[in-house]
Image 1: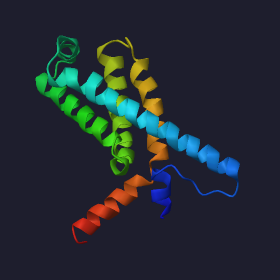
Image 2: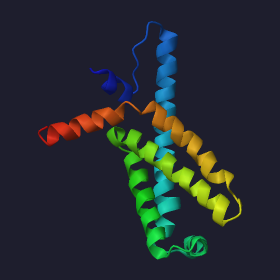
Image 3: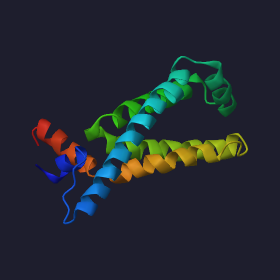
Image 4: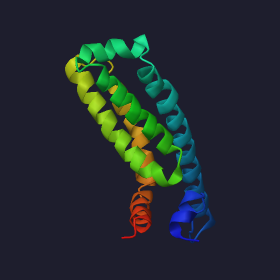
Length: 151
């Protein structure tokens, strides 16, 4: 079993049983975070934007970039939320969602005068934990893509 496979299924090689238990607990924690935030981004964040729910359109009208920006944001959140649920894609998804949340923070500060500005940053913290823990999946993903493309 490769190290990547071991990390994905939650087992960790260690010299002590305590170290293995800590590693397994962290893997389970990250799995729960991936599921919770994956579902959050799909249903609570992307869906209102994609169906143009008034709760989403009001904010995006104030941004002033038009409906295309709301739909683009919804599509990015939907893709990121789904990808968080797929082990091989979860690292890249988490890195991308952190970037999206940093942009959301910037917009919140500049357009909305800082109202609820902490929210994107608070969401970015657990997503960054996922990104860090799943960082090994990013090179593996690109290796598989290169292999599939015959390079």
